Image 1 (cartoon, rainbow, N blue to C red):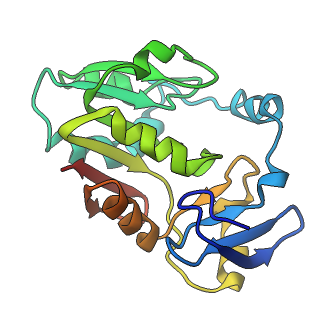
Image 2 (image 1 turned 45 degrees about the horizontal axis):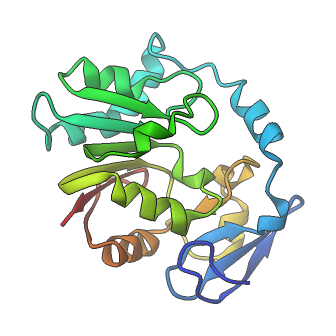
Image 3 (image 1 turned 120 degrees about the vertical axis):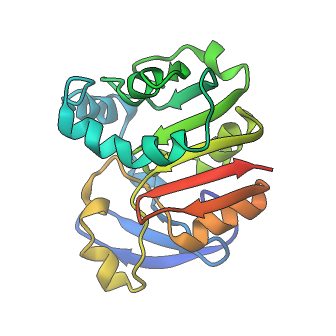
Length: 211
């Protein structure tokens, strides 16, 4: 089995009742066996149940973990893309309220590929990276969307433990649409490979700057 991010050899890590997981020997990515990925219609059906939106104060508070530190790096009027904006786009609204010029893209809910044909001052990707089926390809795409000196703001829970037993007890992997799991070492590999500066703000919030 080869890693879905860096394509180096990966080894069996653990298995639960639904699927086996592999861990890369180079970039440390943990990923579900691609043969277990849901059909896209079933994946979308799960997302359709999400009730988050701009009117949800708790959801705004959740997203502010990314928006607040990101805004400290930005200037009014900068252009941004919320990549994977979901059925109730909210982060783009929050950033527009702070003077940013936002676009959105989502493979299911805002599939305008024209938004992927230009570059932005920053790209946000909140609770999306864990859904990447081909993370090597998608991370390359994310990097290409950002202007030099621009930022990529990520929210995804990183696995910060070590053992297979700890991973099996980790609630985050229970969502069948979550297929790619990152560790701090994985983020370091991504930064080095795509020539990005890395700032890990918490187990869940990562800022990357294009050098």
